[in-house]
Image (cartoon, rainbow, N blue to C red; front, side):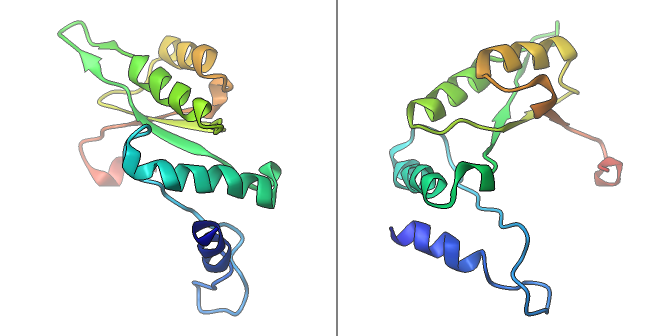
Length: 136
């Protein structure tokens, strides 16, 4: 319960100089899904969802979409496997943030959507850019 209590506590700490609790609290569980080091944190997040209510949380999974060879084919298997692993732990992402060298193609987004049980609009492309000022 200590991890859940920590999340609940820090979510109420003002960060803008006011005395009001923030509207949103972002919690990152880093690492690779399935690694033993992150299991205790993922289980705490799963339990936290029941504690505060699923409607009050948004699970975001960040995944790499590798681009292979000179053809430039975007591969979806790493994302599919990561989401499958999360689901096996009782966590179902609401949003998939897909890192890639190029914009994630519409066909790739639809495939990820179909196999990862999220709406196509919830598969977000976060592609490499040449300059940080190109990021909106």
